[in-house]
Length: 247
Image (cartoon, rainbow, N blue to C red; front, side):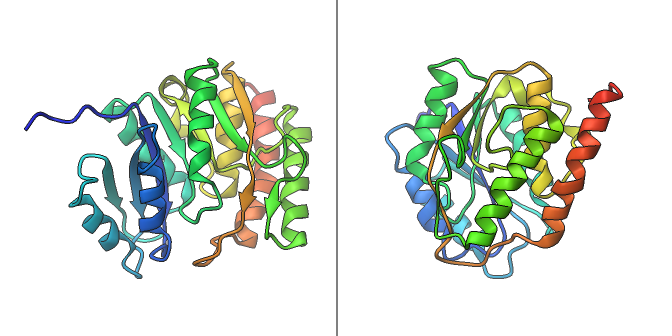
């Protein structure tokens, strides 16, 4: 049998205890008319998330679905960096970040792809705030925290992005090859800020694509106060590094 031609796009989905969502999100992504492959990076989920992925890898998704298993919770940032390195080695041209819980709509993936592939941007961001506040079913306190956190980041870093903490992103391959991934400092919430800031500092063109963010219905949120604190103080360190010429 001839080897299937690989898609040009890879969606990276980090997981920890996502058994309620993982099969549905994989099928939703791979079922889109535009071809997307999927890489799941599982941090030792005790609920059997990885076993579900392994089963799906033996179906018609063989060659389109991939799995990296890690021992224990090592952080969102390190999961994505591991995925970026794998995607570059495998030759993907468009590399996506996406959550497993349907807070990011799979139907929006082609819009992020088009911004890079058709419009020539280097990074496209699924933005909750570029056209107002497009968040569904979040507690008001969390909406306000997220919205004003992004405003705080914009002010401290001096950038124009409205949704600096967004986790729904498409990178052209050359962006991830240019950023020194080994020097990315942050592992949690601030990882998303640092990646966008690094791309902007390197002169890459970034577009915010408006999306509607829907709070998860199944499973448990991984957000914590410690993650938020990392972002709060981390942006000051990022700005100081830039001023000192180390960014």
